[in-house]
Image (cartoon, rainbow, N blue to C red; front, top):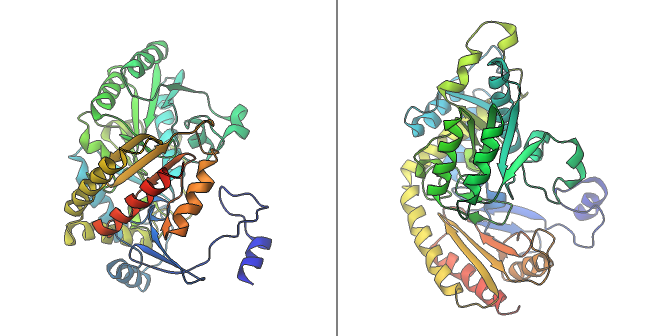
Length: 419
C-alpha cells in the first residue's frame, strides 16, 4: 500500500516518474546499515548520499537534537541570534587558522554555493568592476540551483537549461599543467574572475581525485590577478579526504568555503558559507545598498546548529580522524586487490573514498548501462552503492569496520569479473 501511494503522489530526485523499479522502503537505520521493509539489511556504502558521518541514529547526536528541541526549535535569524549559531560558527572558523572571518548559514549544498557566487559577484560590483568572469573545472558539479548549475560541467543534470545559465568558462580537469595554461588565458582577458572548484576530489564527475600541488598553483594564479577562489567542500569537508577539510592539504587558501552534506552528521539539512576578511570589506557599511540581500527562512536553525556542534564534538570524543586514517589504509589495500581486474580502467583512493571506473564501449558518464547492472548486483549482496554510470564508489560512514569494507572490496572484485 505504501509503495502504491508513493507511486501516485511522490516525485523522487534523479528518477523517472514512470518506472518498473519501485523504491526500496526503509524502516530504520542503525550504524552503517539501512533496514528495509522486506527484511533485508544494506550496508550504507555511500553514507546516504555522502551526508552521514558517524553512523545512523548515533545516540550522542540524537541526545543533542532532543535537548535543543526542548529549549529553542527555531527563530528567524534576521535581527535575532542564538547561542548554537555562535558556538557552531566559532568551531567552524577555528579550523582555518584565522583565514576565515564570518559564517553565512543556509540549508543545503546548492544554496551554500549560490550564496558564495552571489557574495563574490557583489564584492566585485561594489568595488566598481563589472567585467566579471566565472571559472570552473570540466566535470564539476556544484548543485542544482541556477548559479550552481552554471558553474557545473555540462551534463544530463543541466543540459535542459543550458541557454538560461550564467556564462562560465571551464578549464581542463587538472591531470597536468594544461589546466594552468587555460586558466592563465582566462585571467588575462578579464578584470575580475571568480574560480570555483571541488578541492582534490570531484564528486558527481566520477569521484576523480587530483593533486594538491596543481590546485595550489591554480589558486595562486587566481590570487595573482586579485581573483576570488571558492572552495566547494560540500563533499570533501568533515574528514572525507583524510583531513577535516580538503583545503588543509593545500597551502594557498580560498576566499570563500561552501559546507553542507555532513555538517550535521547526516541528521538534518544545513549549510554554511565561510567568508574571509577580504570578502567582507565592501559590505562593512550601514548603507542599504551594501547589504547582502540573501537569506532563507531556516537560516541558522538552532536544531541543525546544535547537531553541527555535536558532530564536531564526536570527532574529538571518538578520535574520528585517526579512524579515518585506518579506513584510508583499508581502502588502499582494496585498491591493490582490485588492480588485477582487467575490466577496471581507473581506481582512485582519497581519504575514506574508493572509486572504480569499469571499462565500457559505451560513452562514459551517468547514463552508461553498467550503472543499472552494478547497482542491482551490489544490492543483491547487501550493499548500497549508487554508481555514477560506469563508476562505482565506496564512501561509507566512519563507523564502518575494516572487515565490512573488505567485503565491499570483494563484491567490487567479483562484479569486475562479470564484465
